[in-house]
Length: 266
Image (cartoon, rainbow, N blue to C red; front, side, top):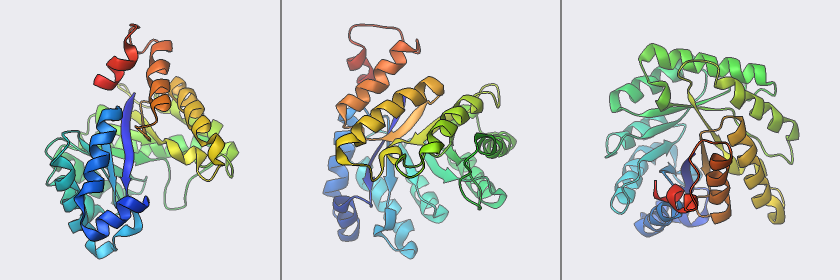
């Protein structure tokens, strides 16, 4: 289970304020804290805090300040591909581009960048019409992305398919469709692409007393369906423990009494 730490995102007030003020301290605090929590990658997302015309410079700045204190590889998360490319040029370790949907012109841009900068790619199971409900359509979009990645020579281990989980309080019917998509994506190629979800989306705007429960329960269900990674709260110790324990119970890792410690040390 690969954890993409979600916290360096301009949607959070402290990060948004830091991006506007060019204050590195909040970004560096969360980079270090998420690494300590068990993150394997750090997702960097300016969110709406930075105007579009300033995002390339913002991603350069984010990459630089995070890499001053943390050696974890980065996930550059934006719909602005110029900003992503600006950040890729500065990454010290192979990064991941998050994300691209199944639109040919976007895929051409993203997979060209991925090959140039030795980066992975997150592919979204949607097109310009939006996110489908039916798992068959999600899988069809995934197949388009897999075929394009293969055409560019991107190894399947560097491709992450995101079936796109929506908030359960407004789109409950999507949860089962996402689980079935995860299962079927693993049949699309040999070797199969990896899979990823934005885990916190499942509990978005649910009452605070159940958000953690929703996240933890869905994570266990998704891993059993074929989930390899998640953009998630790397500092929710119980959530990280669920990820580690699910791997043990499914036989993905060999049991040892110290498996929780070993999971965080990977």
